[in-house]
Image: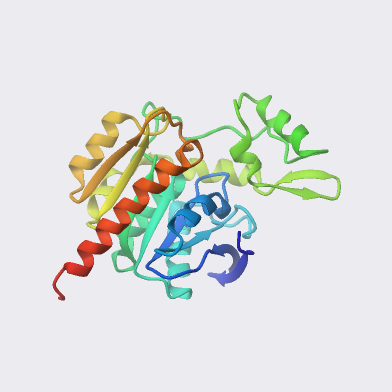
Length: 273
């Protein structure tokens, strides 16, 4: 795990992990409640072929909290990072909310995005397709220990708090979540809605990864997303829930690596324009 680096973009400080190495850049965007370090296993699997840069998105991880939390805010942050680190054009990979930001970025800033990888994210982020808001308003932000924090989160009906504890850090009086629950509620509400038009508007090669046990992306909607956007392929990871990169890290990495290899081979063979 490389140490966090920091950059000031659009009036705030952002943390990111640059896993380095040769090859084309891959900007990795986590979902709500996450942080960039969740992509460390993927970066290791792609080492020597692709350079993974994983951002702590605004209000997450070690990046600044507060301020605007709309999809537009997240999109412009990602665009600013690509420019500031001279990564563009890059593949943009996103999980859950990060997947939505990836395809919104591809629509609004097509020159910055070579290809898309969208991991278990729908375009119909609304009822009854999915439940777009997880109510975390009553969650504690800290507890005397990591295990007590885990128990407190799971007491709110979360079967396994492991994903959320990736965004916890030790503090003087115990263990604390890095995200603010009010920020997360505002951000989730802002992302709710139908983003089908934005999804269909971009033309970069895309990989849509669906978890077979997903509670976010139905099989029907995944197939519709492929039909409505040329150049999109669908891969389903069997036996996985929404956090498919954790449930099947090897399968997740294989699918991403195969798509990237084929996409970049095709781009290299394409005639110059």
